[in-house]
Every structure is written in C-alpha cells, then in structure tokens.
Image (cartoon, rainbow, N blue to C red; front, side, top):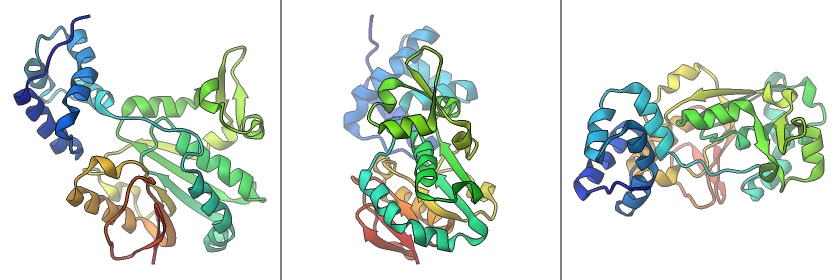
Length: 271
C-alpha cells in the first residue's frame, strides 16, 4: 500500500490549521504521526498529495469532522488513574453533604469512547448507598464525532472490561448475546448525556447556569500551549461549584490559578 509523503511546507499548513480550528499545538516531531493518520483520507478521496487534501478540506464541514476524528487521540480505560478514585472514595461523604437536594452534576470534559463517564456512574452507584434517591446527571463531551458515537452505544469488547473486578461487570454490564461484547446497563447509561464540544473554541454558555460538583479533564492539557491551557482552566473553573474538584491527568500540571487550590497531584479544589 503506497504511502503519500508529507513535505515540511505541507506539515506547517496542517499544523497551523489544526491550531486555528482545534487549539491543539502539534509538535514538530508529530509529522510522521499526522502523515500516517491522514493517508487513509487521501486514499479514500483519491488525492495525490497533502496539499490537495488541505485545499479539499477548506470549508467542507463533513470532511472536517472526518479530519478531526483522524487526528484525535482516544486512549482511555475504565477506572483510569486509580489514585483519583481512591481520593473520591474518601471524599464521598463530603460530596454528598454539599449536594443540595441530593443533586449531583458531573462533567467528563474529554470523554473519548465513554469509559470515563461510565466509570463515574459505576463509582457513584457503588459508593452512594441511597444511589437511586439521587438526581445525578453526567455531561460527557468530546471533540471526536466517532469517539462519541462509540460512547453512546456503550458496548465494549471483553478485553476492554477484562481488568474490571467481576462484580463490576456483573453489576454494571449486560452480555451481548453470544458475542465477546458487554453493554453498559441502562440504569447507568441513562445518567449520561453526550455532546460534541471543543474545549478551546466551544461556547461554555451553552451549559447555562449549570455548576458542576466534579469536572474531569484528564490527559487533554498536554496538547495545548500555556495560553490555551490557561483559558481552558479559567472556563472550567467558572463552571465548577465552590468546594468542587477538578481532575486532570497525572502527567499534567496546572500553573497557579486564582480560585483553584492544589490538593494532591492531579486534583484541584474550587475555593
């Protein structure tokens, strides 16, 4: 299968286009990765160069969606970042105490293929004894249309759930016929609302006056420069309740931010 090569000039065109449209800062050493991910689009469109594809992309909204799907990285798993769930388990009584009217609002701000928001639902079901008496809504957003499509289906292969304790699987999933697939239980999937959203250029006012008790924005900041990262954190902090928590990835860190207090690595509290 012939692979189309990308020139330095072409890479610079896409690098600027990606930054201008998604806010993602693509490092120079990512040229090979970009070439690999976009070659499939060139083949399907019968284009001979990345310059042709760049020109085709133009204002083609349908192709833009496929382009974002191609460049997005969707690496996730159930109960990722174990220490954060241990922290939340110890903090759950305080979270419940701040839940006026037993109302909990949580945002998974880069939900990928759904493992994170469904983990949140599974965690709350396990940790809150009177779970069914709570008004729980989990907003799950991502920039990738394809990732959200899979997340909405809520169906995962055996290897995706293989590391979960057996009681998590039996209590939260339904085996899909005789296949090696498991579907998240309706009791949990009904708590989650999925939405396509760009954390850099999206309109945060679309969420109205909703204030979140917890916001998960993990392993996303690594793709942005400092100014973009600062703007995202400001927007997330505004949507966080006083006393609420912001969770980022363990490999990430935030600069000092007015209104957010460092708690432990990767966890910040709205003060």
